[in-house]
Image (cartoon, rainbow, N blue to C red):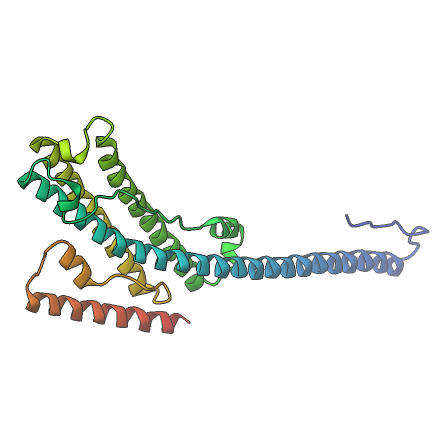
Length: 253
């Protein structure tokens, strides 16, 4: 509140009148200026706090990112082992577990990426420089996509697990039930491959998000070899695009 006190006595001349008016105007200017200065430093403090929170949240997400890469590599081995066992049981009905190519397992881990700091920073986004704001927006959009990929992985594994509510033990499965589990396992492998591709895309744009999977790991997982010449051309195009993006980012800075 700005208190403006009336003069102790009425203005008797034009000079006194203008002095009173000038005093009031000057007081208002000083008050507004002080208010804007306080607001400016308040926004600066909020922005600094938001940047610190985002930096901490980024480091946490990088830890989860690396853990998800490790989980991808573990689950690839598990799912391929499951697939080998199911294929073996189809060829050798009721085979004893000690003859299976691998131990059948459905245990998996899903990592959840944090975005609380990002949502809390929404009220100060306008105070951020455009390139910084756009970069953070893009990163959290990509992390949201990766989180959805992780949910898809979990859903694929649950679909396999749910079969054993009605299905008998592995040794007692019918050929049709084995075929169904093979299809679901192949779908789960595809979900893990899709999540790995999303991770690689994030790493392409934000190299501090590592370690990540490689093209070779995904190609081996899907048994896809591809045309080496076409693959080399595609990688060259991606390299040029990344170089152009980095140059554009430096120009904006």
